[in-house]
Length: 494
Image 1: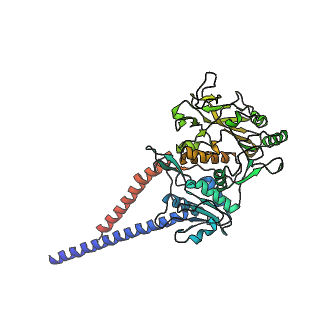
Image 2: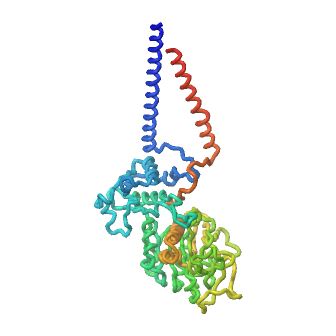
Image 3: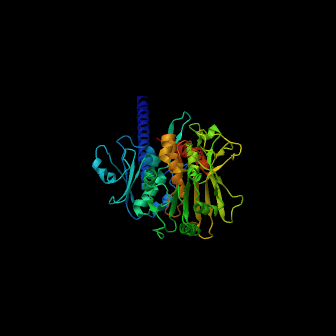
């Protein structure tokens, strides 16, 4: 009896020891698999992105540029230890996984300011712990990405500003593209007709340089051969007219696929005539009406002022991301653009900014207060339009024209001081989007932001639902069942 009890005790001890070893081995395997998958995931980006905004995926534009890289690029993060941004570090790991030419290094600028000395000399952009620096090997070309290059901001329900979109991919890929290849599109600002100078638009021009533009002035009377196809010409609120020769030069550039950004001032045009400038717009049936638009709907005003217009943004590549951000753009002293009843063959005209149907066109400036008179035009008005003319060749040969009737697109400092910094940023975003639409090169980068407000897990296709169902309802239970049978049979035979 004692012998049988002793044998049973040994058998139970053996079974218990075996179970303990199996359990320990199983846990060890789980830990090793988890460590291995994490390591491989960091190196090769092994993950399935099921977010609706594709938050954990890179765009095809980025993937193509990274796969074609030939030179090394280093991305410096300046976070303090323990204060890393998980959204940004996740994006950087995806970049590293796609090419060995991307390296990521961390610099604590508080402890080692000398390490970033090359990026602070002769640069107006201030480095912060939230900044990223993208540089080529010898640091001769670099780009600094600030917080506003990494995130878009919107108003919360309580009126506070919050991060709404992760836009770092567009800025990061553009910066990599520049420092690796040296490519920069040209943005010329026309001079010689009382236009705004680059010094008057310092905030704008500095931002465009950060966005990889060669920002230059152009006097077509002395530099008639300076522009080439694909260059952008910005006409910034002229006060004097073109000569006939200048008008013919710009028309010829327009006919062969030119890219134009017209920013006209209705206040100036109320007292001036610019027939040669306006004739370029009339080619597409666009007319600049005299007067300043006033808004009669409080929901379309800023600061409760009739002249501070908060327009509706119509659907377009230029405006879509701004609509998503929910931060409005503001046009101070805007003008009304009269559209053609019929457009010419191959020409597409799209309204970008429009007022409410309670707006009116103020033409009487003798009174300090704006009051609507019976003979003044009323109704919904267009403040900005895009024009694209198909020249029946490659898409890069199409003519593209943008017309903003009001200078707030360039007067971002005034908008920021009069309204808010967030709205000033939104106007700047509108300008950047406008130039991105005008640009035409396979090297140009325009990538939509990733929403930070949508749920992280959203099944956007039946295939995703099927994969999750198979994993959770079939494969996992089958594996557990098989493991249970194996354990049972081994115990039974002990």
